[in-house]
Length: 452
Image (cartoon, rainbow, N blue to C red; front, side, top):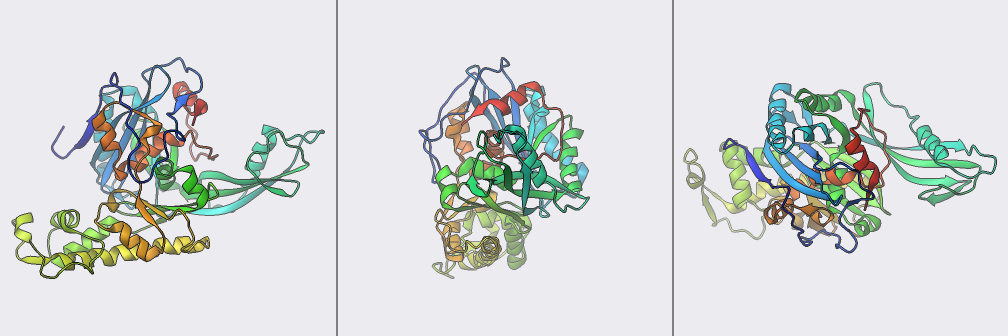
């Protein structure tokens, strides 16, 4: 591997290591048992990939089906990204090369793994809307069967959607049987009229197809596309947090993704076109230094809170970059960072206001993504959002982990999305897929037979 490649771990599949739950945001092992296939699929040594293509890095999590039919996390990779801007492709050649460097590493584990890709998407054009489907129960005895449920969900897709937009997810909110609502699953119940209220997530079709084409060009196959913040929520949020009410905020390099949950359901999602790169750019302009130096200063000396810092606490720029001259106070650095983060949290709060939950989410806000690696960011989030705030840690207790080192790397909030993609298919979310590729038999069995 070249020096530019950040390759965390590629663990040997024969090794097994079960790490205990760590971190601030984590369901206990008792409530989050190791993921296991409900019955043997008969195929071993199969891999599949959670692929998160960001503006600054490409991240991948690779899972393997073990011989006891549990899932094992065997590799995490992170490499520089080029040609991606705010979740969309703006240079196909550069972006393909960036993703190709990751898939090349994965092929050293298994050449077939790249045929089983679950891809994160979080383009700034992503929108959500509520919809409703209504059907008459088809059987004479009024018992509701699976085909009635399927027809109701199909009916909810009859929305006013522009020709250049594609449905990414259709998530059931509740079913209503003969006017009685709040039903999670009406199968086997009796009624004449069945309704379903859904939340539909859609995005600009060319943006989704361009992301998929990158993987196709490299010989891979995308089996599923998942909203990035929804994937992150699967990795870090507990069932109790989602029941109480919580906002998942994924701060990436070029954008910030928000998902809001209440009563165990997703009630809103949005993608904000501002991210941690904006902070770095502000520092480069304010301090008149190269962008690379600004990134180092942000991570090494930055803080989201400036009021307690002294203007006399100085950073010598030349020690960070020989090309940079002079000094700058840590207080001034923090003021620049604080201003931009405050703007991001204001935009997040606007999304929370849309669903009428301003300062009213009992489980607060959970921060994930590479952009949360700034000192005191949770304190600023608490101030700006008037909610409790914490950093989200991927819950790897749901997977076996090949080595202790890999377990430690997996607890990085930057990998929340990639790990969440591996866990996503075992969630109860019901969805409409924008693409309908033929799913390999082995992967289909994984997705059909997972139990939490």
